Length: 431
Image 1 (cartoon, rainbow, N blue to C red):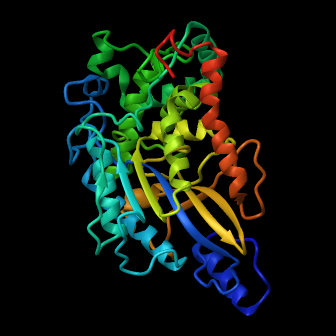
Image 2: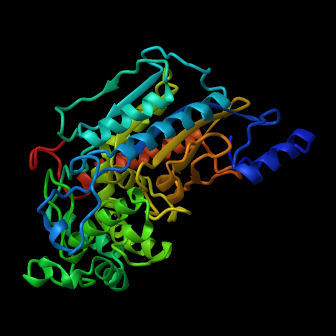
Image 3: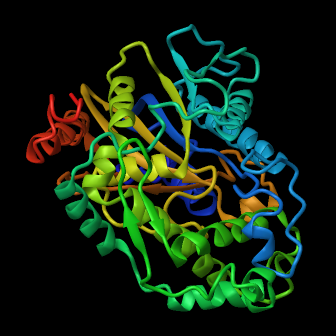
């Protein structure tokens, strides 16, 4: 297990510590008191092409030509597939090393579950991951919706609204909005925005911080109008271009910018996701189906591994609903829910007591750009998350019963909001 602090002083311990310092992994487990019992993964899809199609504002907002993507708009790229296979291979090596799975494991029907949203990028991500994770098993992929549709479990839409709820929720969202003046200016400079057709013909104007207009509608995702929305689609495409383009300068359309500048550009999209999906009472509304799915998997006595594949909005809303403590992921441009990142719930046992650890496991920027092969000595980034109202031990572990109680409370918060805003039947048709 990575990042252990509970270690008896012994010769094998010294070797383990040396391995950890130089590789980030400990593969000698003689004094490890924890046994891994189950893993539940909520994954964001891997690298995709931008959501916008040819001829959209994406093309007209810069005089430069975008990267030639290996897939259609919004679909998983070839690089994304290769990276996800490598991540699946890493998870296999990790879980074999932890003795949760034997090598060349062939699971029974109930032990492993792969479940994806109905979009191409989520289905393909789950397929690539499973091929690396279980290379000699023909795993079934669960898809509960027509192809290219949004499964209600993964669809971050509002299932209740009211005038007062909207007012209170939007107030929470506005508190998460930050001044992006410098980030907008950097984005426009990299795009050579004022030389673009969209700027010259008035289709787009300069991006201005603070002009956001938020809206909440039943059975729709939270929405925002203004500079934040337009700038996010362009910042998203630029960051995806950086992941794919060999030459970093070419990725910035010939501009020589630093990694901190890239992080600043991505901050626009991070802010978009934060404001729309992580405000407490909004995230409780959006993430309710996924929270229940995660709870059911953690309570499933037959399950040892679950892979749920969705979107950054899913990870963000789940973390918001669970009251995650503020965090910023190192060696990432997208510092909250990077492309291909995994929100990992790990159930451990020590003696007769069960614990849970929650981590973000993700590729660093260099690993994304270099198509790095991942193993126990060259693993992905791992970051332990903490949650408001819960006390972890030195290893970042929570007692399982405490975490499940916290999860249940956050699921129940949905019903509390319905009661608070008087939204029960028969007024809205909501139960």
